[in-house]
Image (cartoon, rainbow, N blue to C red):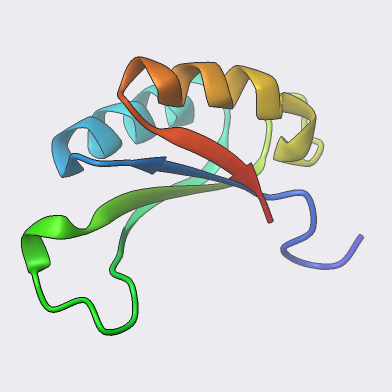
Length: 85
């Protein structure tokens, strides 16, 4: 499987929520759970950025895409969403 295939990007509007969820996911065995800013090209208002948690590996050791539904439900709890990359 190519690197990046099967990853899930969990996008949330608030940095604090993204950091909290990333910590929860890491404790559940997801990796890598890094939080990054997602500013759209041309966006000049730093307040209007989303925060993205990239998840590549699930707690089962396989691609996180197998847990897309679970990750999506968690994201919705924080007002966000999950997409497969």
